[in-house]
Structure formats: C-alpha cells, structure tokens
Image 1: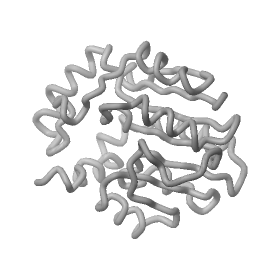
Image 2: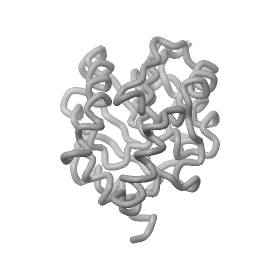
Image 3: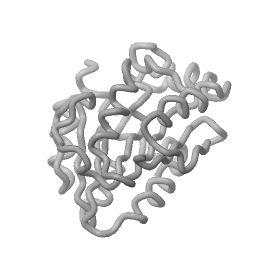
Image 4: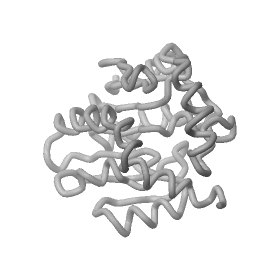
Length: 204
C-alpha cells in the first residue's frame, strides 16, 4: 500500500474498538474547547486527515480543514459540510486573525519544521483565539512499548516507529518550549496513561 493513501485504513479504524478507547480523552478535550465557541465561530482543523473529529461540529460552526494529501481532502469534502483545502501548513491560504479556534491534533509529530507551522498557525488565529495541540509523549516508556509491539505488528502501513513518520518526537518540555513562543499557555495535560500530551494555548 502506497504512502500516498495517507494511512487510510489506519485512520478509518481509529473510531473502532479497541483504538477508539485510546482516543476518548482527545474527543473529550476537543469537546471542551469547541463548547467555548459561539455558534458560527471559525474553527481550523490543521492536518485534518479524514476529518473525523472536526467534522462532528460542521452544523454549528464554520469548519475549515487543511491537509497536504489530496485523497484526505477528497474524503472530507465527500463526507462533511466544512471547507477542506489542500495546502502546506507552513503557508496557509488564509488572512491573519481569521480563526477563533485551531485544532492541531496528532499532526505536529509528523513535521520536520514544526516551529514554522506554529508561527503560521499563530498568524491565522484571532487575538485571544485558542489552539489545542495533541501529540504523543515520547518520554513515556509505555508509548515505546506500544509503538514497537502493536504498531509494528498490527499498525499496517502506519509505521509510527519510523523517523520518516514521526521526525519530531515530543516530550512535555519540548512541546511547551516551542508552543509558548507563540501562545500563552492555558493548560498542559497528559492523558491515556500519560502517553498523550495536550496543550491549550491562547494567542497573545
């Protein structure tokens, strides 16, 4: 299976048992962040993949999704009402101060130059707008075990243990160091036995 298929099988199965258990904390924190937005607010899903998270809110909010993979954008357009655009996260096709909330979920670890993207996300975020970042905690030995057992043998073409897939491997310290350059920290949390890091920040 070609990488261009954007790990479709893996992404589609994230909502199925047992993988859906791993993602429950993420859904809860996304719900919390979105619930603070007024109806019609602009929400950007940066690195939207198949849109299975932000697509849940497309009836009440103006959802925009960006991904570099044409197949992911095609899928989102066919299944959700939001506006989905193929674009590079380092050069977004939006004016500054557009979005009230940015969801940056399970994407930052895939980037070789994440600080360029954080700077660009800060540009398109409204003053006092918020960003929710989610990534893997590579300081946790449990993730190392999971990555080299489940993902290696049952993860299909999503080879998270490869540096080509996750070139930037985050600890809480690194995530805070990079994110706090562009945002004011509201909280930093870990969930799922501390294997997942969550950062909520506000544009300064």
